[in-house]
Image 1 (cartoon, rainbow, N blue to C red):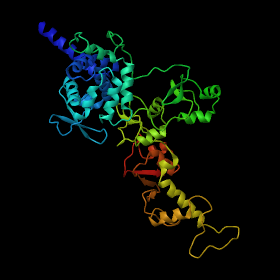
Image 2 (cartoon, rainbow, N blue to C red; image 1 turned 60 degrees about the vertical axis):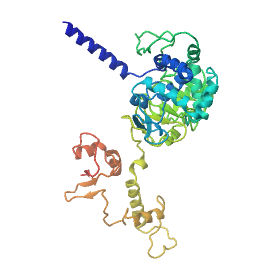
Image 3 (tube, one colour; image 1 turned 90 degrees about the vertical axis):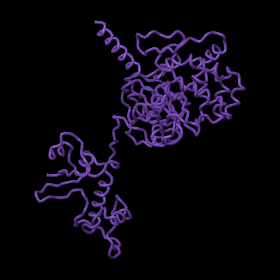
Image 4 (cartoon, one colour; image 1 turned 30 degrees about the horizontal axis):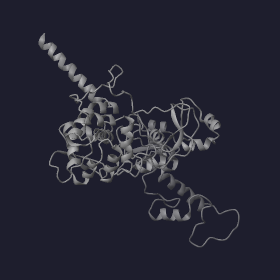
Length: 459
C-alpha cells in the first residue's frame, strides 16, 4: 500500500508540474516569482531590482518568449567573444544570432548583473541613485543595451505600472529577503499573492462607451452585434470612412466586441513588436496596436489572408527580417486576377487576338499597315500581346499551343495539368465550370490537388 501511495503522489506532482509548465505566465506571476532574486542581486551587485524586473518582463514577454523557454536567458544577452558556455540560435536583429544558454534562471539573473557591473561601457550607470529608475532606463539605451528606440519608455512604463520601485526600497533596507520564489498558478481557485494582484494582463481592459487613444489615434470599444452605421451616424463620420479606418469592407453586425478607430490608424506601431496570442489574427493585431493592416502586412513580408502562428513576433516599427510562421487559420485571398494569373490573362489575350483577326470591321477606315493585324478595340494593349507572343505564352488564333492548359484527348474530354499556385477554384473559373463538377469528374473527395496532376476539365 505504501508503494502504491508513493507512486500516486509522484504522478500527482508530475501532473501538477506539467499543468504549470504548459500554461502561460502573467506579468504579476513573473514579478512574484523573481522579485526576491532581483532584490538579492541588487544587494550583491548594485543593479536596481526594479530595472532587472522590468528588463526581464520586457525581454521574455513575462516569461513566455521562445528564448527564455529554450535557454533560461531572461535578459536577451548574446554570446559575444568572451562567452564559453552553451548557446542557442535565435532570430533577433539578424537571423540566427547566438544567445547565451543557462542551466537555471538564477544563473541568468546573476550573469546579467555581472554583465552590467563588469562591462566598462555600463560603468557610469552605477553613479546613478538606485531609485532613479528613469536615468537607469535611458542610460541602458545610451550604452547600447538594446536597439529599440522606445526601450527606455517601455522599461519606465513597466516599472510604474507594476510599482516595481518598492523592491528597490526593500533591497536598500535592512529587512530580510524571503527565501525562494513564489509561483501562483493562473486559475480561478489559486490563492492571490500578498503583494501583487493576479489578473489577466494579456487582454487589456478597455473603457466601454467612451473614446480613448491607442497609438495616438481616437478609438472606442464597440460591442458585439453593433452595426457601424449607427456609430457613424452618432460620431458624424461617413460610413465609408469608418470602414476604411478599420480595414473593413462592409458594414455587417460585429461578430465580437471590437476596437473601432474614429480616425485613420498609423503606419507604424508605438511598440517595436507584438507577440501573437492564440487565435489572434492580423486584423486583431492591427486594431490592438493602432496600425494600418496593409502596413502590418508590408512590415512582416505577409500577404492578405496570411495569419501568424501563436507566439510569433510581429514587427510594428521597421521591417521583419523574415516572414513569421503561419498558423492553420491562414487562408489565401480569392482575387480574380491574382488567383487566375497568368492563365486568365492569356485567355483574355487569345480572345482579343481572335477579335482582332476576325471578319473585317463594318465601318470603313484607314487600312492597317501590311503584315499587321488591326489593333484590338479594347482590353489588353497590343504591346503586351506582342510581348507575350515573344515568350511563347500565346499563339495566334487557329493554331495549337504547347501549354499545359486545356489539352484535348481522343475521347473528347479536355484535360488540364496543375501548375504551381493553382487551386480547384481558379481552374474552375478558367474553364467556366464548378468546383463540384471538377470533383465529380476527377473522383476528388476534397479540394486538395498537386502540381503535375492531370484533371478532366470538360466532358
